[in-house]
Image (cartoon, rainbow, N blue to C red):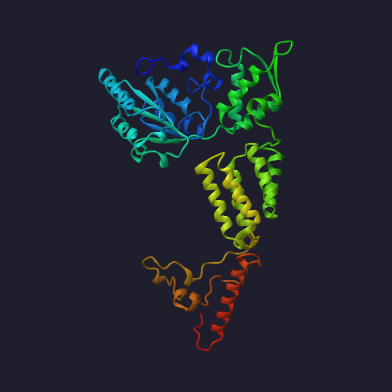
Length: 453
């Protein structure tokens, strides 16, 4: 029962008979909970505080179907707390105040009584709602468990965030989702164990990949596939790839994240950008997104391509690629597919140069294969007390004291040329500038009045 004597619907057997599979299969203990080992594994902070009964107020931040609500209910069960649920969208100030005052009375009657206020989509609380809730949280009258898919540091009142511990949930892995799907097929009461089901590995893999880390979506699609497929003569429900596609309304694409299809597709994507074919780049991008590839992985590859294959021929390519990764983290899917496409198209159509890649490769080879050189005295750090007594920085020429902010000076104690700008895009300007510097320094060194290094 909750604080007001209302039965928890997830313990109501009548409700469970008509609830969706994802609701029926909510974990009821830590032993049933799957995923989020980075915060719930043995010895982890959240696990320790829950088991010690010192949960306090927390905000669970992460994608849909990653177990935020399920964990809130497990916490209420483990800590034997009264559990009250509110929706940030439909509840008002009066609801919050009523719950807070009831919790206060409960504490007066039983000082160890705990009340957990679970607020779904807590980022939708307006300022008035948050202001009313804050005193109850500050005084420990209510333990808040808020869930949100939005970054709480951007969307939730700073005062409320500062009084709560924030735990970030991650999308469930493919293996974790498969574990939960197969568990649902065996549970006779809460799951689909009353059916005789034969499901192919291809069908399971498709449900897993198409769910994109959202176990709720995977479980509900599995239920649709099982209950909508007529059994055979022996009573067995056969679930193949076609039924899986129909149930989750998404076409299967040959794409194994750990196999050749994964590496071949990302290779084609990178080579299309490098080869200046925006149409091909967008196609391979679309294939990866449709198949459920991690958009952050794609963004990282665009960044690498922008630096390796475009470089200083168009320095804005790297800026835009990095912005696409930030957009993926901030906006999330599916909208993040737009900045990903924008960045891929920009990189594909930008002038190309691998001069930066070549330069660092040559320098790394020299460092690895040759004797490393000591830093010349005039370039050493002279900012600490006693440095000048050691001769540090002696003879250093400050470029800003010279015409055009450049002066002849030894920066590398050996002859070497690592960076050779191409004739493409902005690197033409860089090459012109370097050549101009060389000519001016050569003239200055040959001039009788010039100061020798």
